[in-house]
Image: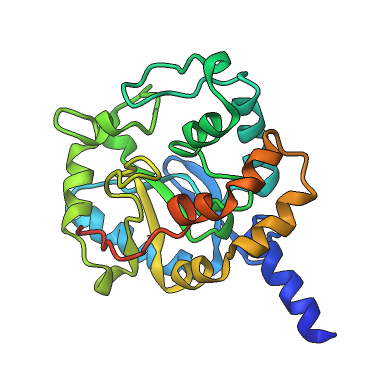
Length: 239
């Protein structure tokens, strides 16, 4: 009985339906929630960045299942734009359900499968480098040549996960999630959570959710897990 309760609690953590493992994080850019075990390593990472003249701040931390579900459903209904490889909105009415699923997954995680559910993953930026009034977009051009956060991106490229614990799960597109140079993951926790988030666990959660495109998602779930969830956490912050 105790084991069953622990398994249920673990499943809730892995799929963004619990908050008991989280603590508030505050910096110059605002406040969010992160896994309590990430707080001290992140402070150390910020201190390293500050010595290089970089104000490393968190744009996004924990994201709940319900919030991810709202994002997914709005995109699936065509209420929020879904972009193609060129950054242009898809002709949503022209896409079959399977095509819609993979178009969304390129940029947005399936509810229950977002790394942000764990509190171990965060999106980072430098508000000082951006300047007053800057509206953060979290798009690759901001972190590339000529972008506001090019120096932050270059610094992240040089980091070693051995010293910091942080990795970049999406350094480039490999047929699944698009490149996210702003996304850091705390490997000592996230690596274990990723292994435990199985297709079977996801299926049990999604079967009872008010999820748009549910039938197509469940039919494709093994492929979705392989392409978008089972990301090998092998990329250190330095590549």
